[in-house]
Amino acid sequence: MNGRTPYSKCLFIGIRTTGTTSCLRSQALQRAIPEANWQFIDTDVPFHSALRISRSLAFRLRFGPAVGAINQYVKDRLAAERYDLIWVDKGVCLWPSVVRTLRSRAARLVYYTPDTSFLNNHSRFFNQTIGLYDRVVTTKSLELDEYARRMDRSRLLLLTQTYDRHLHFSRYEFEQKRPEAVLIGLCEPDREECVKRLLDAEINVRIGGKGWESFLRRHQRSLFLHFEGDAVFGDHYAEVLGRASIGLGLLTRRFPELHTTRTFEIPACGTLLATLDNKEMRGFFGPDEALFFNSYEELAGRVAQLLANPPELRRITEAGHRRVISGPFDNDSMVARVLSDIGLM
Image 1 (cartoon, rainbow, N blue to C red):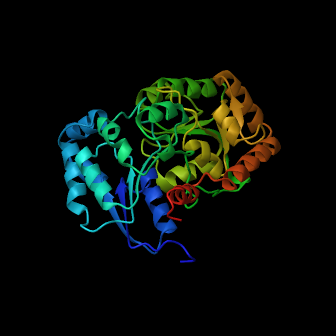
Image 2 (cartoon, rainbow, N blue to C red):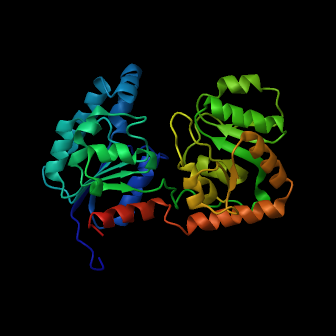
């Protein structure tokens, strides 16, 4: 074990559905501490076993039978002995009584979320238990003040969103790429506006994700629009990103998001990242490592220019790819940072 702390038992509580970012984090944890006896409690099992209306109440209000089922499922599977580490991943539905039990059985208790906790995804349960964790890990710099009002700042760790080296990697040579822009994600009005602007400029755009039905009907005659499906996950997602020339790393307008998982997944897959220009993005990428834009009109012009100039497109694409794979933006680096921060590595 090379002088590392010996581990006996570790627990991950979170979504373990294949292709989800939570599942990828659980796998990174297992790689980080392979000698441990790992237990995984998949909260997606009771959630998806509940009725649809119960799932909706749990997702939106943290209320109803599905929430009760999740908590009972966790309690039923907890071991009686203490754990060296319990990692709670996006545990917005965990009751305070359950978190207190976790606290009593964990030498180290970590909460990780890649989502907002206050501007969106609000959870009264998390607000009541935030002080019980040895470390709370967030990727949202815009919420630091909110966290500081609720907990000891020394227990808060701000990290970037992450990609996974074992899934998000370059699968295609530059010459094999499609001359298109790709956007995989939930349909939102702002994203519709972006795609329409590119289509109007006669740029091929491939989209995928939930909620695009109405947009597809309105643009069914477009020769430039391609639909990949409403469920694009795992290897399929990485392949679609990697096959495109340009990936649209759009940010949601539901709250002032500054970067997302796509910020790193797109260039990790060997594709040029097109992103709104902001201070956080400029901290990750130089001007010749990503396509920065301030309007969709500017984006359309730059995309058309780059697609017509393969050498320049290739140069920026490869620079962005090198920047990401050489930085601490992957799940394994993130997990190592958290474990080191709490004295377990």
